[in-house]
Image (cartoon, rainbow, N blue to C red; front, top):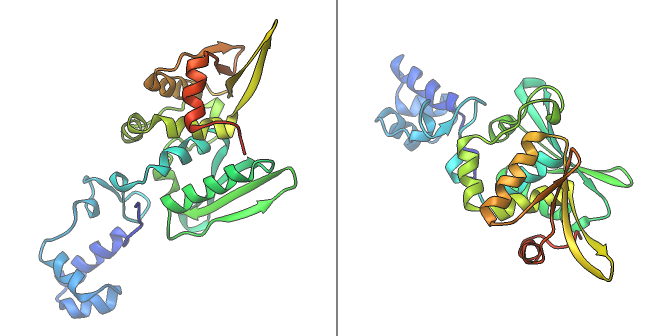
Length: 251
């Protein structure tokens, strides 16, 4: 499970107070951490993820270990790329917002569970806007988890996965495809003269996000085709059957 722990500032403050001559007990009271934890820090037993340049991220002022992100993050990444955004709020807090079609409560519930899995200590809110709804959650760490965030619309800027995201997607490409198709995709009946069979479509204006979708299909060995400037199809019966195992009709 991915879990937010103590701010990196707690470690730095504890070391600074100790340099000023305070005992471990005094530091613990001043900083508000267990005395045993302070003793570990003062004894040099500082987890790598608490150190700048290690495996953790201190850019947001909180400690998290990207290596501990749950698989649900990959699904949430797909939802974010399709219908999500981040907005800045006071004190360096960001609001993650995922817009969803109210006709599919099952997708909304799965997305909510994914947010809770990624950020278990943070609350998730919901706004019902009639035909659609919005899930949201506040955290200083959202830009660290979604480095694709930036000014302007997604399709107007460069979108690509960073290395650690690629590693997670390589391990679970089906979860990314599920998230992308739940957000900006659909499964429908393709018809011809005397035949009918299901087909998947993914539509997005961002060249980068379309490329991410296609690369995930490639990882799964799925054949895809394009139509127009924004739509990608997965149409072969065998490939549709694969997608049906982990995506299926929206609910």
